[in-house]
Image (cartoon, rainbow, N blue to C red; front, side, top):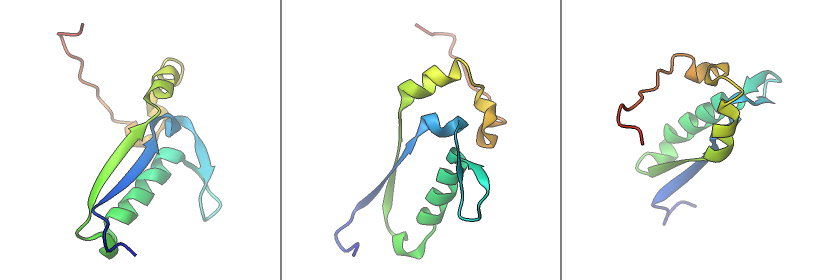
Length: 90
């Protein structure tokens, strides 16, 4: 099934940081945390032991718009995020 596969591309929407879904146990869970859990399960699966992965974070434009009105800390994954701001911003 994966005989000629060289890279697994995993695409995640950055704009999901403030959205929720119901997991397999019926619990309401943040979509970014669900994506993280799913990605971790794939990367650590023995089938993909020698596989390269490419994580693509898309919908950056929607993400930027949401950040103007929704704090990033609404997702537990980013609760301790400390951005570094360049002094040389243009």
